[in-house]
Amino acid sequence: MRRFENKVAIVTGAARGLGAQYAIDLANEGATVALVDMDITGLENMKNTIETSGGKALTYKVDVSDAKAVQACVEDIVKNAGGVDILINNAAYYKGQPVVDTSIEDWEKQININLNGTFYFTKAVIPYMLEKKYGKVLNIASAGAKVFFPGFAAYGASKGGIITFSNILSEEVKYDNINVNSIYLGMVNTEKTRERIDSDSAVVIPLEEMLQPPEVSKVVLFLVSDDAAPIKGAAIDVFGNRY
Image 1 (cartoon, rainbow, N blue to C red):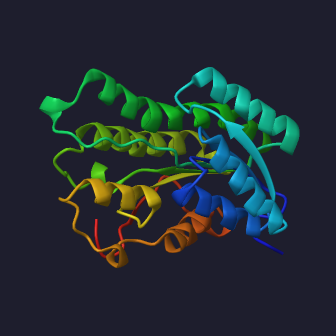
Image 2: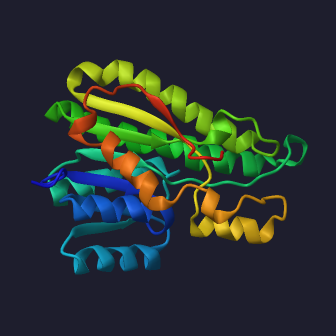
């Protein structure tokens, strides 16, 4: 039996990159995957990819920083898929700037998408998991919350908040058979990373030295599987060879 047979998983930021990789791999192992993103074309492409391979997918164009839209999304997923077993909070926004050059708008956008979005989806999902006495929540943080790179103040603060939020939530729900964990993620060879390299000559890490999406996905799927049931409140370094 596949690891995620009869499970329902939500993946935010699922239209491309790592979120797409997680969604494809979950579907290949039996999960019904709810794909959440603002890129409707990317969502439809992902849905087609999953269904062509025999998987099941639902699509939701949702701004994760809109609490009401998130709540409505989760309610619709529960209605149409029968519940929620797994949540991967992957959606993120990054804009690198020194603190002195960071506008209020840029600060708030990173906090709202990265930290508040994680909270909104988790808050919407947790009651269903508590009712079922089962759930897996994995929040994607960043090496930028642990290794203090110049220009990462807003992004690092948002991702550091995710770690603290995750660990406290884990203490609140761990006796209800709910796993809440997070990962500090290093630089990954995704489309967004390649776009960043093209626009920022200071990024000189070769693509082959970065983490690759399939290897990150193996860690993520392990952490939301029943094989990782004893792991609760962990914040795990997933750096590969480079931050």
